[in-house]
Image (cartoon, rainbow, N blue to C red; front, side, top):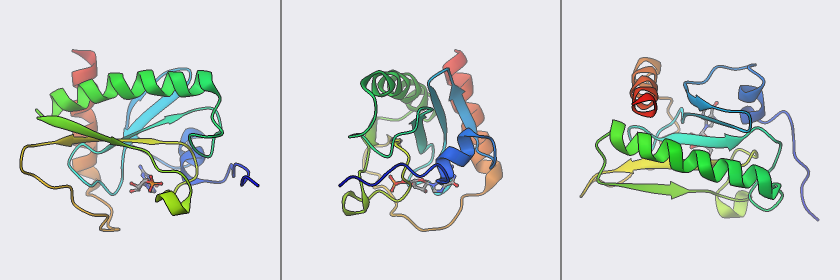
Length: 142
Ligand code: 5GP
């Protein structure tokens, strides 16, 4: 049996504007914002606006919109952080490493020889996140 979508999850609350996020991109179907506990500078999340717990219960059209936004934002993240590469990941269910149960894709800029930091569980400095978000928004507008 699949677990139903819980509309009280933290990303649903960000979508509803109930809690703040450093937003970098938004369209009719998707939203992108900075991960509050980044595993690399520029760690960005992309989510659909339509409720979906993970990859398996998302509507194909919503998934297609998310994929397009992941590509668009990934290009901007790569430019904004002069990255050598990118790591994109997406977890499903606790056994798969998922901790927030609204479908999301992680975008991480990568530099040669620099390992990702693990999850520290510590919030990043909000001013730094705001500066990173501004950099990505500028790259999106370029
Ligand atoms: P998951 O393990 O479910 O793929 O990742 C959830 C991600 O959401 C984690 O990287 C975590 O740092 C991030 N996160 C958790 N709570 C918040 C929040 O309130 N705001 C933002 N922007 N990111 C969050």
